Image 1 (tube, rainbow, N blue to C red):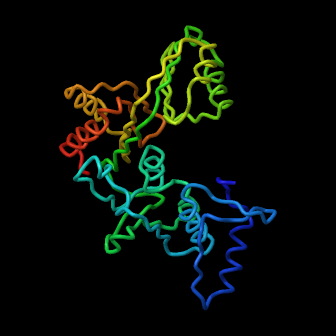
Image 2: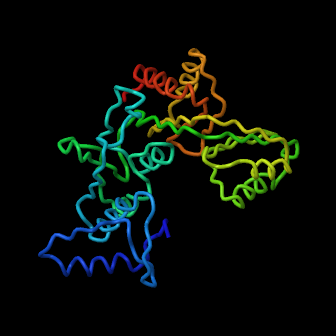
Length: 294
């Protein structure tokens, strides 16, 4: 309940139902569903969009439209960057990264059924219906461009320092077991010989977590941090771009406390103090405008 997934028979049942109402216009509320026993359940965050995507995939529609309160996915948060623009076309991988990393216009799970069937998903603005919005496809060919910058605030950085890590196996397994037992989700991770740093949502209480982690080594918690992530199709294959971005931040006295790179070919993420996050985004946008086309 609150995070239900579709059953295998859902698609067949939907096709049967909608084929019986061809002379009508069905209106489906979304979000609410029934489980295998007929009990009421809900699909969770983005549940209405998820419903639309499930129906679109089941009926093999030409496209799925998601109507929201924004002109689609943006190159940056328009509340931070006044010149932020709508992204015309974005790949599912990019949309998923941006949604996970802080972009709130779309939950990545909601469009997965449509994308798996290679059905385009368009994100449109209810309050600006003439705007063309953003189209999400399996693959978007944009060449050497940054798609967007995402900023996620109110995060905590947890650092564990232990000489036991050096040339040892199983240490990381013990760390993640603690997070799993306490049901705390990890967002970013960065490691060295005897240190591991992780980020978590600021909503989590860390008292018990710190208590358990101290059995493995010294623990430091830094709150009021923000992660900034650059998402781009060619990020991994563009030499020097990350160094230049960090140099631009350093020249403006903004310290980068943690970097997570390599896990995704289209994403480079780093952590700064929350109080300078907006300024950091604007600096990167200004730098990128001179190097890559937005």
